[in-house]
Length: 151
Image 1 (cartoon, rainbow, N blue to C red):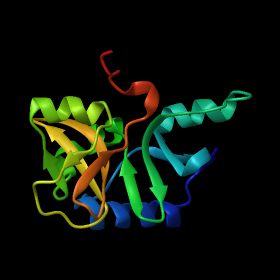
Image 2 (spheres, helix red, strand yellow; image 1 turned 180 degrees about the vertical axis):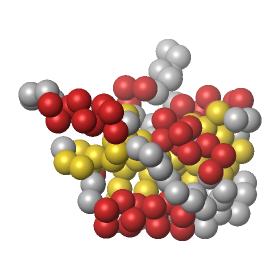
Image 3 (cartoon, rainbow, N blue to C red; image 1 turned 30 degrees about the vertical axis):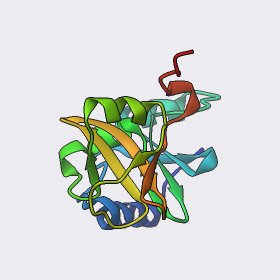
């Protein structure tokens, strides 16, 4: 895990602005990149403390993942950015939000641009989903945090 350079932060912010209309993403936070091109965010105070400690494996909150297609926001990353997200938002009903958290594909009902959208139920942001060519959204929810299917 290493701290993002100023150039990398600028590229991330440009991608977030293009994809989601976000201005000044994660301002005031220190950003790190870890395995799998995951972006983690923490406070400057925590980053300073971690530099003094030995053998720190990870630091911060997982907020986004970089890919060739763009930036996918984690549920926590989308909640941190909440009202800053201006486009590519998909409004979900309670039933759709439950399906989203099960990582079940949903039919896209709104016009979007780009490959990633953010799911939202009222003021609760649920992270990114990938839009396929067939008009379905595939939520990017980690297996360990999905709502289990009832048997």
